[in-house]
Length: 176
Image (cartoon, rainbow, N blue to C red; front, side, top):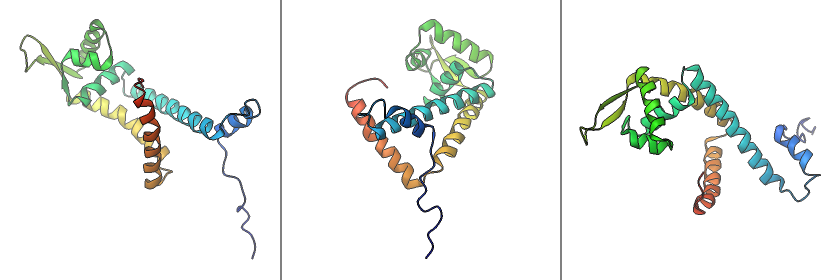
């Protein structure tokens, strides 16, 4: 019986394989599996960050505008300025400027607070939600494209393995 011509071929190589080839002779005690996993995660996150920035830009948003709309959407589409400021870790003057810009663009409205009529709530408008969702979809499509090479079980396993690692980091009380 003839052997399949590709039966003993090595798996395809990526950038990280070349990185390991360069560093293992220099650092012989380097764990190649740890270095490969960390390097690949870093490169993936950098790539997704660039896709996010481009997606945000393509829909006419600045990163800080997208971040503000994202936090507001995550709070159900309405929040007090102080809540947004805390979530975004901003100074009071910074959140005021952001909200003024987003209001001028029609992405948010200031309405009297339901809790205290002397204060205002920030409400995400339909236009703001659409701009946020369109920019978010760009990243979602790229995440699905890249992770789509994995089966459902492989994606679940990857997620579970990363959770196991993150539980160690989170138990130490360090910010992410």
